[in-house]
Length: 78
Image (tube, rainbow, N blue to C red; front, side):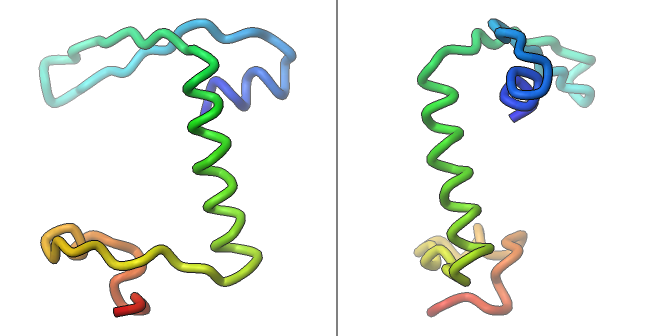
C-alpha cells in the first residue's frame, strides 16, 4: 500500500520495497513490486470500500482460532 501511495502522490514508479523483521535479528527482505501486486491491492481496497460504504462484512472463517484476533468477531455473521 505504501508503494501505491508513493506512486499516486509523487508520480514515481516504485519497483521494489523492503520488509524488516525486527524480531528475527532485523532480517531484511526485498520485494519486487509488479503489476500483479497493484491488481491484488485494488481488489483488497474495493473490498474495504464495500465494508465501509455498504455495511458488507466478510463471511466467518471455519477456523475458530483465526477469530480470536478478528476485528469483526463480535458482530460476525454466523
